[in-house]
Image (cartoon, rainbow, N blue to C red):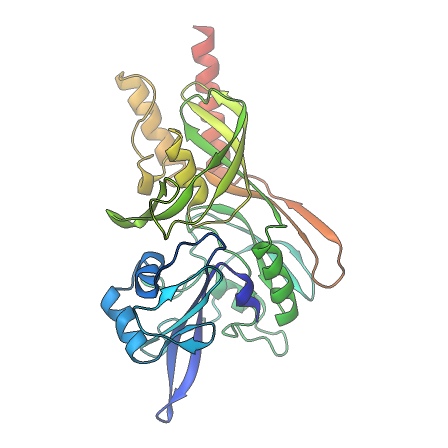
Length: 356
């Protein structure tokens, strides 16, 4: 199945229970080769931000946590390359994907794949607090007249994800075969992904590589943080390569190439080296981190926050092998208006400073 090739994947399943349909949320995780041995309930609590340990332990007691296809108790010691599945029940229709007419920018489409340049502020997948109005609701509408297409079929759909406030390229598989083959490419790290980010500060080096294992921050499970080697057994190996595109006074435009694809990877790695993404509220980039204290400068930055009211991060390029033809395909997307206007504003500001 396609999800076996994902390091972390979640889906919705509808099953017949007691004569009626009930919705279940199904998570699947594949532990890294370097994963330290740890209790399965502890591992899942770390990976699933909105799920309590008690709820996970209840799932284990009900036989709904499987490791390599076999039920385990909550104290099972998970090992490298274990495949962990957990099923949690929810009220009917809470996460059902229904077709909704939401504008999307389609970059490429054929019988096997759909590539979208996602606008900022669009949630990718239904979940807590976002039961509809998502990218997948829009995809369901776009493909509603395709014979045999089912938006709730876990064998098709998202191959990877980007954050709600991140814009850029995202790939959808229209067939089970396409999802399996594309999912394997992401798992094997053979895809090519580059992002453009505006970060706080003037980066000293023209290029570099950030290596830092990521796990949820124990002080705030909605955030991730970098852990030293061996400190947190749940931390996942992560590598980001970056290159400076342009320096503009107190910010820098960088290109980031992902070698791994962890949640919030660029955002956390950039903060780790002292260059938090501009206006990244979750990681503290929504306040003035560099520059002066004049009222004029504060007003300028405030206006920049208004222009681009999100983290300045865009998934600009995506390269992969087509699942049917075997052809390598490379796509590049334009920056959205908010981020382009933000960059132009900083560029002009930097020019004025240099002329003084």
